[in-house]
Length: 451
Ligand code: UDP
Image 1 (cartoon, rainbow, N blue to C red):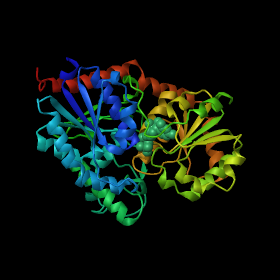
Image 2 (tube, rainbow, N blue to C red):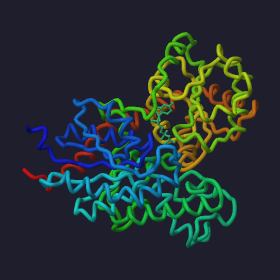
Image 3 (tube, helix red, strand yellow):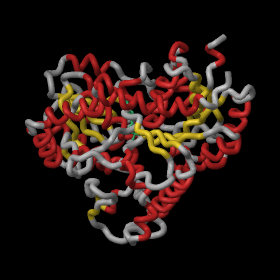
Image 4 (cartoon, rainbow, N blue to C red):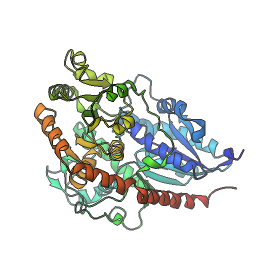
């Protein structure tokens, strides 16, 4: 029963697709290093992923209750409440059970689920952080005290004025309106800001933070010096990304993927189809903009595949789906990687979520960017200004879309830049760096391993 005796690493993601995916990939890398990863998620995520993970993947999935009624939508604040108030007790109980024979050597905690750091401390299990996004976004969050000190934002995170600034040395400019917590009503912005300050305060106590990113360039093209993100005696930041290529697992989707659109794609000419997806949190786009985008796509005459969850279709014009049935496909959830790999897809209209950005770079697809919330503005700034592999649009009028498409498709250098970036962050040298950094982390854990 050697398999059963492997040292355990518990992994706790924030309960959303874009967080579960990279942690499962990390889990898969840990299996090959002789560990037994245990993915701990609330029941509503567990029942989607657990049946889709093969026993031979070597990852154990376990669930804890989140105490939320089935019919209550799990939005940001509901999830935050359960993470802070309900889930800790259940996680503690589970850890104590799993660790009965002292096999738990570490808990890797998604920093957006920083509540679990306290639980690990309480149980005496060493914790490491996992940052699922760009290092530049971590830098932005860690700059919060400085932003307050210099008067750029108030004590409650609200910008004093709207202007463009560099939040950290040599990063591309961002608008003060584009800070990750500025979503929704005034009260929502303040509450999200509190979430981020609390996250950062907890993260500071950790010895390690594993970052699902790679050395990023400055705006002048030079590689960023990590020290500006992790000065002094803060956590040791280890860049282990992108994890995309190193895991053998095909990460399960939280929703059923519509594979029929691949048959339709087969019939399209190379490089003609626009793929549209705003990730798993489409809600901030709003019905009016859904309607505008629908009309702009139709008017463009271009073939498209659009991921639109059923509850957002109310924004579609009456009779729209029938009208465009030859021109495009509207699906509830797509096999995104397969679509991006397909030669018929010419460009990806994206919200610039970090996983989607990495997947697009992996498949070398040009990006039309419409960031909506969170870290997407930082990612977009890198896509457009630093890597120059995409174009940003600011609205969904016919003109916005047509101009954006024209710019992104007519840039004759974009393919070369995509290929260069792909090689730099996913080529052999980069893979070696990822492997070495994961090994640095696991070697450190081996000291705690029981024999
Ligand atoms: N995704 C998918 N099918 C879809 C839309 C998205 O499989 O129809 C996946 C996508 O491949 C990515 C994840 O969902 O891995 C979204 O993560 P991302 O960080 O891009 O955005 P988020 O949903 O966190 O905003």
